[in-house]
Amino acid sequence: MYKMMTPGPTMVAENVRMARSVETGNPDLDLEFYDFYKETCELYSGLLHTKNESLILSGEGILGLEAAVASITEPGDRVLILDNGVFGKGFADFVNIYGGEPVLYTTDYKKEIEAGALREFLEKDSDFKYATVVHCDTPSGMLNDISVICPLLKEYGILTVVDSVSGMFGNEVNVDASKIDILCGGSQKAISCPIGLTLVTISEEAKRMMENRKTRIASFYANLLVFKNYYEDKWFPYTMPVSDIYGLRQALENIKEDKDIIKRHKRIAAKTREALIRAGLHLYAENGYSNTVTVFTIPGGVTAGDILKIMREDYNIMLAGSFDVLAGEVIRIGHMGYNCTEENVRETLTALDIVLRKLGVELKDVLEYR
Ligand SMILES: *Cc1c(COP(=O)(O)O)cnc(C)c1O
Image (spheres, rainbow, N blue to C red):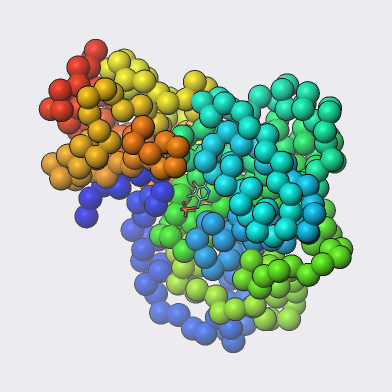
């Protein structure tokens, strides 16, 4: 297997793979599984510093985003879309699909959302049912400060839907302190599970909003209300992927034991950026760097394809290019979750040094982890 230094999916710990292979019962009929599911949700909520209920949905991260939007959007609702990245903008599509009216607040894709400017905007127009915010916009590695932005939106009575699929557990997330109404996570990023699960964490206010709708939620699979009373009634809306959830539980236990997790991500991310800059490469963003992924601009004269191919074929390391407006422009090094060790990043940067030189890129200094 190759070393998968991509910003999701990430590498998976041995004990998580093992947990997924144990014998399973029937999750619909096995009453103990309802406890296991609920305790896993509570463990996750606890790690995100909230008592709000979390739900594990059977589907990849995108399902979580769609479910959040489907469940609280009614036809004609104005929704503020904070757009300083590809995922940021992408929320507008979901809002459109469910009949809402997305209003884009578009800012420079190389900079984090600036609270002062957002406040000025809200002073003029704050008539929004909710706003969507991306914590770490993975294609550019842009980190938005949700601890400032979400409370600011709430000051204006605007609920918040936050996509922290690639942000959480590498960057601090405190749902209660940040007043986040719906937080979306995914199994395959810093949680370091295989692909297949998404998690949504829902405030009481968001639940009331769903329950007091005038129109029905136009979905079943993306309807968060279908989980209502699942525990009391011992009835899941659909059969739960029990092995995936066993794996998730182990991964969350790993995170709980890992007292240094955020500090390690922060240190490794900072050292990765320093190494690239010393070598004369350019980071894509000007500020707002996430601890989970580092994105640099492809130097002149080479292509993303060349770099990725040689890294993979000669050094057995997979890095990622990017997509949408960033396709062909940048390379991404994913150092989140189980990827995020000094050894992994050291090996990656050393290989990248050789590959770039081979392709004729002149580096100012040795590209290495120090
Ligand atoms: C990975 C990711 C998702 C999930 O989407 P996929 O691209 O299908 O994996 C959602 N939001 C963000 C910010 C992500 O990084």
